[in-house]
Image (cartoon, rainbow, N blue to C red):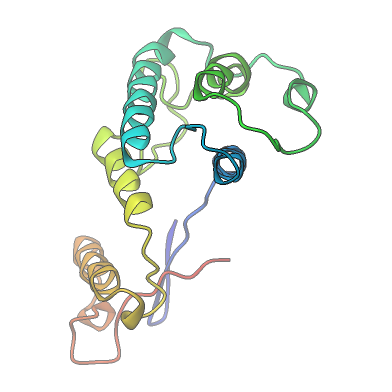
Length: 194
């Protein structure tokens, strides 16, 4: 959502709880793999660049397959409340699970509980900025680079790219020059969370 008040422009972004939960669950699973791998000579997925490429490719394939088949899935999930709590163990994993099992969980445990926002023929409630394939690749690149853009010295390219793209947005919205980071005045964009 974009709002203006006086000389301020506010861009509000929302991260959905399901995305945060999936990311947390994935991070815990990878942590369990790495923890086990550090105490063993066994090979565990995603611990080497080769494993990352193999499983990253499989995950991208799963995503593209999902985007094609979601038009045939129900838009609204048919699961009952707390279904996932009943399907998953009460504690985070402490031992590794094969990535095949994690990928299977996507189909058998996660997918049934999704609202299929990407169903191109059924769901028209919202239009999200990350809905396109290029945007997914952009988010993947951001995760892979893992830079912090909280100030210029932390990552000059990240900070300057944010300023440039917010200037593009301001120009697209026909905002006055005082909103531009490239203006002579005190303008500039800042993304603020609430």
